[in-house]
Structure formats: structure tokens, C-alpha cells
Length: 216
Ligand SMILES: [Fe+2]
Ligand SMILES: [Fe+2]
Image (cartoon, protein in one colour):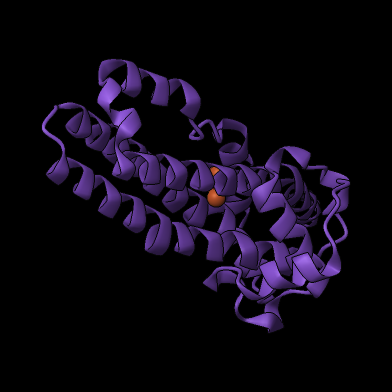
């Protein structure tokens, strides 16, 4: 990942970074810097840049990001949509609300399942609890069937909304909504790259060690 950020730029971004990074004790400065860059430029992701970070750091980031999505992004965007519904006369705002509700429910379910299987497994490991063979099998099965296609093709969706209701282009609340959703999408993209290409490979390493141990 090569970008032209000065250390000052980065430090400024880090100090204003959202609440999930506020507790310094959980992360190295290096990890925070890398995450600040990745969150704004997820397409620059390179798994090798993150592979040396500890499982605990990555795990804490995943866990706190889920909390952050629930407490911050979903809440914030829902509020914007409510304003849009209250301030427009067309049905498009209601369609946007229905679309977002669907997306939100899918994301909530996705996170709940990850927490119940993957995060639980890693937490046990971090706290020295031996994972049962049943849980190890569940983790492998879950990883094989789980996908992060929850990240929607947003530009296409926006163009459908805008074709349906051209007045949206001049609507300030809609442009705020669009901006928030795009930022959230970048955050989710960064999250799913870390999850799929850094966290899961580390996790599979643990599972295979555990399975060998249990098979013996
Ligand atoms: Fe996740
Ligand atoms: Fe995920």
C-alpha cells in the first residue's frame, strides 16, 4: 500500500478517528495508521501489509467495528433517511428507507453469526479456553459458506434512485445520505478485506492446530 500521507496528516486523522480506536492500549500505532489509510482507501488493500499484526489486535478491531456499525453508522444513516422521508413529497424516500432496512437487517444478522461462531472461537483461544471439536468444525463450515457480499454495488443503486426521482440531485439531505452511505461502504470494505484475508487465515491456522491436537 503506497500513499502520499505525511506523518502529520496521519496523526491528525488518528486523533480524530472514531471511538473504536480511542483506547490506545489495544492497538499499536502502526496498526492504527494502517487502518486510517485503509478505511479511506480500501482498494489499496494488500493482505501482506497486515499479516504481521497480532491476532488480538485484529480481533479487537473486528469486534469494535461491529459495535461501531451498530451504534454509529446504522443509527446515523437511519436518522438521515428519516429526515429525507419527512422532507420529500415523492415515494422515493420510502423506497430508500425500505432498501436501507433490508440492508441493515442483513448486516445485523451477518455480524451476529460472525460473533457467535468466529469471534467466539478466537475469544476462547485468546483467554486460554480450549475450543471444543464441535466449535472447530462449526468454524470451518461457517467460513466455507459465509460470504461478505453484503457490500452492495452502491453506485448502481444510487443511479436507480436518481433516475426514479431526478429531484433528488438537488436535495441536500439526499446528498448527505449518499455521502454517509459511501463512507460506510468504504469502512465495510476495509473490514471485510481484513476479515477475509487476514483474520480468517490466522483463524484457520488455529483451527488446524486444534484439530490435530484433538485427533491425536
Ligand atoms: Fe464482520
Ligand atoms: Fe463479514
